[in-house]
Length: 483
Ligand code: GDG
Image (cartoon, rainbow, N blue to C red):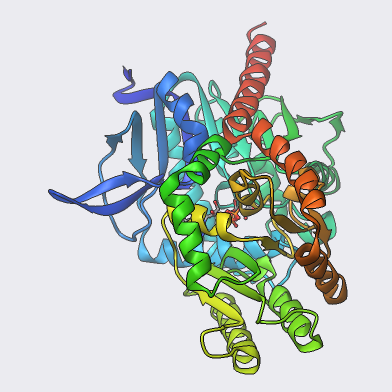
């Protein structure tokens, strides 16, 4: 339970993330908070229960002043964002500067000094909230690109806590990162941590190279020696890759649930019982390669290599960041393509593409995964891509084919998928055709190996591996400094 320290409640495990893991819902007694179903909460919930845990984050609505509250063994500390913070820190610097920059500049990042000022201001607010909640020697785990300055600020405020940082999205090659006018400040912010984790070894290597080229700090093996500053003594920052995963057991259980299996059959019937049902599931984002996938599918219909007599394609594209120009643009592009493909190739009652710009409950998602013979994950760049892992976890009959972009973190692990370069439309068309015609024996062989991979490394494993490592490097630092 929480003890008092310096007038604040204090917790020995503190998570800092842009969003709190809750959504507002309508309960029997009026509005209430419900735990959101995200993977991060699932991975951290057991640790939250075992230790006394607090979670610091934004509620998702601007200009709200909400007192900390408790929900399902978690202490939640809302951080307020003003309307301008949402515009400049969240939509601006996080999603129109860092997001495109870190995803290989698929669209051009925008650099605005006002957005940077807001990023500094909001990161400082999060760091202060963490400093006020952490018990002496606590573990503090900071998440993702919106909060890269938090480790550095927090170390100055609270040199006693053990700070971990995990980046959910890629870390770009130096030549791209170097465009960022504030590159030094970002790296110094990250290096405030005792442990900085990435999805893939290549992200970790990019980070270490950026540190060497920008700051001249050397890494021995995986450890960067961070020199003393006016505010802090010298310390070591460990770097490494910790590929995130899903709650594979829960997904598997959903896929064995009779109601969901029945729903999967209904879905197939509702789309006309095709021989092959192809599926795509993504946030509506230009990094996900939805246009490339539609292009390949359209050409396959034109070439007569696929026919709407036997095949249909369901594309779920969940609404995302809808106020940003490039997100409006990708939505327009996708909808234009879907309209054209359906105009040219659908028949009455036989749509070529079923396009759903909606979000669905988890159970319905599982039913879609179960219903689909072929899953297309064609991201142009993706830190991990959990959809690929969820599809595999749902295939309890050990059938179904995953077509997976090489440019996802998941491709490092899911080697038995049909790996594709989504920019190579001819190659993508061949992979889709191969998936559609694959023998059950080959599909089964591949799926069994994919499933054993996903089952073995689930999200609980991921969280405990990261936190054990953080505990260890934090203790090493305590020993060195107490001499
Ligand atoms: C970032 C990184 C990294 C989607 N639509 C619905 C829905 N979803 C769920 C999926 C999946 C999650 O959202 C999306 O995760 P992804 O990993 O595919 O992609 P990002 O949102 O871009 O996530 C990514 C991840 O962080 C974790 O580190 O893997 O690379 O970009 O779980 O199932 N869930 C529900 N309804 C929907 O309509 N319930």
